[in-house]
Image (cartoon, rainbow, N blue to C red; front, side, top):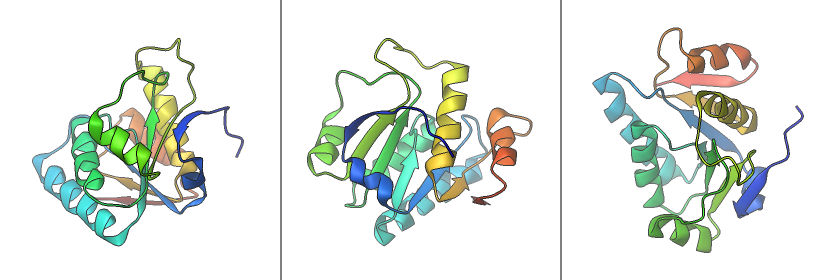
Amino acid sequence: MTLPALHTLGNTDLLQQHKVAFLCSRKCPAAVVLKSFDWAIEQREKGICVISSFHSRIEKDVLHYLLKGTQSIILVLARGMMKRWPPEIKTALDAGRLLILTRYTDSVTHASEETCFQRNRLMMELGDEIVIGYASPGGNLERLCGEHSDKSISKL
């Protein structure tokens, strides 16, 4: 696998850890929400490094649970690096437990459908395992899962 050049902020050593990629479609059934929260708490308690975009509502909530722990987190952007970060992100960066990465330069200031697709592909390539909260039938996430049949993909 050849990865694109990446722009990083934070602890790049986290890329050497075993990583579980978490992805979830923007719209998902209510039952998936609670399963995702339980899954996030379990990963936090086990100290497992989670890589995600934390972009969809569910993914943001998963990040909220993960930030309460001490395990490593990798945040992948579908745009260039942001200039300002919320305090909880800064705290995790300062603690050396967070890596933020993107394949896009600072000139890419907004995520698009294409940059989100490429970001998701990158997360799936970097993850040693892939967990799908929910993939909308016929959607881009379902299509990406088909591209990564060589990896362990589980669904909540």
